Length: 147
Ligand code: FES
Ligand code: FES
Image (cartoon, rainbow, N blue to C red; front, side):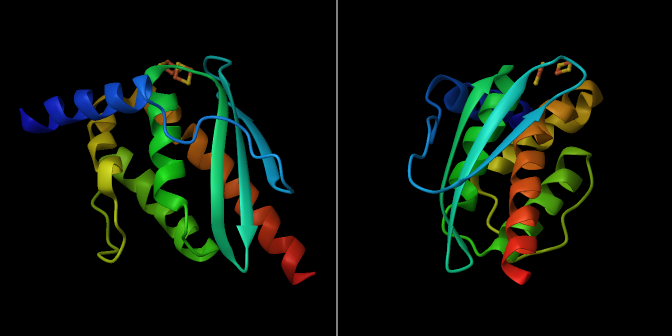
């Protein structure tokens, strides 16, 4: 069906032409996260300015789902306020588990294609790897700024 085709096309596109793959050199937050199921790991770097995620880049090794999800995630969170990025992450995790999302104002863009992952429960951890790194980084950032 259409979702399957979209799912494959979007994943392959981001896997072959990853957006925001690389490193940020100037004063950013670095988070390492690994998927204990397979041992793949990802490094996410974020730049947060004035409460907004102004830049996001990733590096590391993983399968097509984890790397394409990282690519889509960095694309989606750039420019978002921290709270909005965290809420996108929360909704994304519902989406890949096959649940409906309940925040209509969030713009999912390409990410929506990853809904197809819900049919393959073993791959959900792949899809959420980069997002876990995002949550960890942003929560640390929040703690630091409220201290
Ligand atoms: Fe990623 Fe099995 S752990 S596919
Ligand atoms: Fe390791 Fe997908 S198989 S992250």
